[in-house]
Amino acid sequence: MTSLNGVARVLLIADDHATGERYHHALVSGGYAVVQAESFVEVLSIPMLDPDVIVLCDLAVFSYPSQTAQVLRVSAGMTPAALVAEVHRRIALRATLRATRSLAA
Image (cartoon, rainbow, N blue to C red; front, side, top):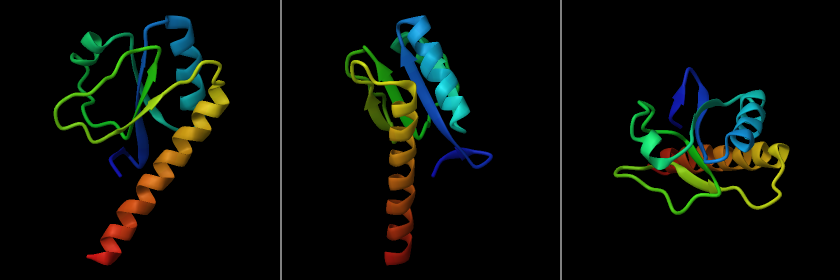
């Protein structure tokens, strides 16, 4: 798993600042290193190019060359706690898949 000092990294893209701050706070409280942007254009200037999960809030499809992160679109009404739980689930699944591949090799 790509991580910063053992902490999974999340790129949060939220065009609404207040919503983004709510999810940002919840993810940080959940133990993640979070980088937040308000648009795809802003993401291009952020040095973190390899997050583990990309969280999209009310945005169109997002991808960039060599993207390896899972993309999670926040559904209408998703609570910050539900978002953190889903990110936990995806990070754990990704780590399990990588460990399984290593054992099979």
